[in-house]
Length: 454
Ligand SMILES: Cc1cc2nc3c(=O)[nH]c(=O)nc-3n(C[C@H](O)[C@H](O)[C@H](O)COP(=O)(O)OP(=O)(O)OC[C@H]3O[C@@H](n4cnc5c(N)ncnc54)[C@H](O)[C@@H]3O)c2cc1C
Image (tube, rainbow, N blue to C red; front, side, top):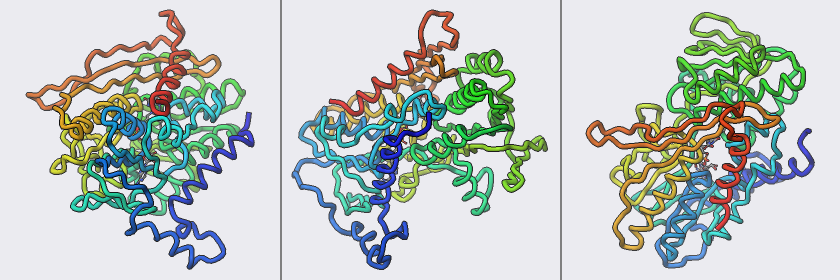
């Protein structure tokens, strides 16, 4: 099952929207490049063409799992607020469940959702533009389509990649980004990776697991299982070589180890506690810090992550104990230190919570409650724990999955968070009688409903 014409139209629609947001001048397109250059810069420094309501305005930057939730629930708890969601993409594409799409086990339709529907059903404004700066003194966000003033600002831009642990050479970094993208940001990277998997003929397919608190701890192991599952099913003489900086599988270890062992013994080669020391992309070889040389036919190299670049541009980023340039916030209120009118949520948070969609969603409801309380002149909600519910598929036909369900507790004396009420189900073979595969799909549908429906 290749990409249908409908799928291609959808993806080209998303690309067209991205081009619009980026400004045509940057793309070097069109008949009159000079004129296009001016067109591309028209937005910055002018007022965005949005109606003024006079109501307190909440600008939410980033229409991912965090931003969509905050926008919906601020409007729900403070109906008089003027909520504007600014997102650079034209359509939403889900990272959760995307590993199943990589191996043709779900349709693209399942992952793609309509921002205008979310805005329409939840009564806020969707503004399709890229945020390029924040003037905190003037409470203004600068976008590719004009400036927006705010009373409250929420920055939820998700992750960017940090290749500095592998290389300082821009040419190598560019090649890694374009030829072997990580596939941990939605859109083009996923499409590249899918084509790599579907076109694979034989040999080693390298995947890596970074250190730090990277986006979605189980996803690289889930991806390894599903690609191995695909090779096995299609009779491809391929092997997933999984190079993991961590000393062991970072989450749901029992379930993944048993899947590696029982389902994919000949298809997954796991290298824990191993870093890539050097890349030779021309020879298609990596050398590990144990001096082992591993040849590969294809790969997706997942580097460390950092907070989305716009945090740094806005001057609200600092290094956390896990990653570079994450949000400089009060970890209980999500307010930027020194700027209580600015909030950061989702995968940019510096706390050690799981960087996952369910976490971003439940946390987003809490952030929304706090902003709404300020708008309504009410007492602010005390800290509420986000909830991490995360399913991982280990096989695709039928979908077999393992799961974790966890909250967090705050130790005020030690000033740190710990996991609380953790429940895992790591028996993918159905021994406990729960169909986790169906649970995965139902969880995803429920999340999309929450973000896109009233
Ligand atoms: C392969 C994979 C599998 C996963 N599986 C699961 C799973 O099973 N369960 C789970 O709970 N989580 C899963 N996750 C994790 C989940 O996708 C993330 O934790 C979640 O997307 C984080 O939400 P966010 O809002 O912080 O960031 P995102 O969802 O990435 O949203 C950020 C948004 O901000 C926009 N943006 C960034 N900068 C700007 C700017 N300057 N101007 C305008 N817009 C901007 C981006 O375009 C993006 O849409 C998975 C992730 C991956 C990659």
